[in-house]
Length: 145
View 1 (cartoon, rainbow, N blue to C red):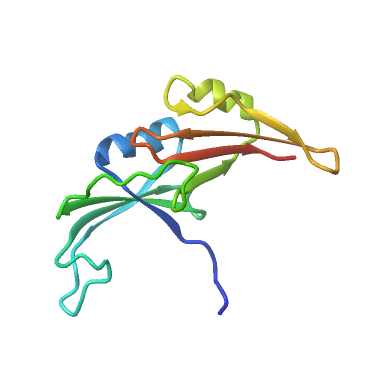
View 2 (view 1 turned 135 degrees about the horizontal axis):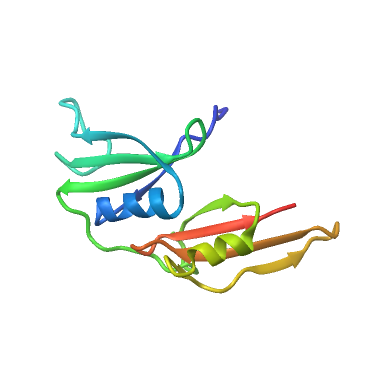
């Protein structure tokens, strides 16, 4: 098997408008497109019979996308996984100035720590911070050489 390219990451959300606002106006992604998703007559790929969802895509045009998945019928149930448990996931962005990103976002989202830095064997420095979006999904920001 050969993978052609990345497509998107999907996140099930409880408040579609709030999460869209966060990823567009706080993180700085663009609202790209939206689908009113209903199962096809010949089957249902989600494993949830007769599911009705809104699929809203945000991201960087021509690059990676985040699919914000809002279950209309049946509604989604809580199921977040803590960062240190199997099944936990996160979205990571490379940034040019980690300290500035932290300062800009620290009052708009919850971070686990301030930026942390480590030195690689080649002497270069890498920085990272972990935080959560308004619904508890894990986000990482990294600054690489």
